[in-house]
Image (cartoon, rainbow, N blue to C red; front, side, top):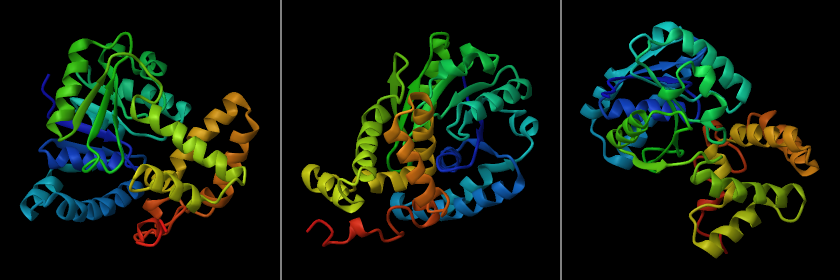
Amino acid sequence: MNFKNVTIAGSGVLGYQIAFQTAFHGFNVTVYDINDKVLDKAKAKFELMSEAFKRDLGATQEQLDATFKNLHYNSDLKEAVKDADLVIEAVPENPQIKLDFYQKLAKAAPEKTIFATNSSTLLPSQFADTTGRPEKFAALHFANTIWINNTAEIMGHADTDRAVFDALVDFAKAIGMVALPLYKEQPGYILNSLLVPLLSAATNLLVNDVADFETIDKTWMVATGAPMGPFGILDVVGITTAYNINQMQAEKTQDPLKIKTVEYLKEQFIDKNKLGVATGEGFYKYPNPAYKEKNFLK
């Protein structure tokens, strides 16, 4: 399987990063989103990404010019996927939104197209039948700031064709990722199986008034040597993602603490558009968060 044309569906926190990284490595990339206004925002984010690639990777202007030539935009799904060898879905982390999207995608995409979900917490088997091509469907999950934290977790489901799985592993390597194959479905893959409990424990301490967020971060950073604490991580991941995950868990379990966490995130962050690094403020203010100050750990 030879992927040349890749469509990224969704230009949010991870979608635009996946698109830019893929285009940077020479693939022909179409960015799809629900309307042209959202796509215009993605174009602005690509300008910022190019600066990050210069700063962090030493990317040349020639490489970045080639990257921008490889990027195309479309808000018409059928047009966006008409030549796609691979579609990577990065729509919001909400089961119903994803199911609705796959119903439309199944009708719009050519038979040859392989589908991959970038879902961070949901299983590919939840959507496999809706794709209309379960054997050509798997999960391909990236960590945030993918040009630095270059992990790509590949996870099939019971009906994923092994050749498709192997092709996704090869694709991940081709776009500069460290490919991390999983041989069994696991909610949260490897990374989030480790990370989500940490972030959940941190928010539990906060909403239960045990300690403030800076003290919790300081504790983690001093004790483990980590460069940031759980609330710094939440700002990078995006507070909308944390809110969606907690909301799903609250609906499922009716856990009073989860419900309290959802209310807290909505009132203090979502309603105030303090969504993390992407909006310039979350728990910390950016581009110079307090946890990077030299006296923060004292």
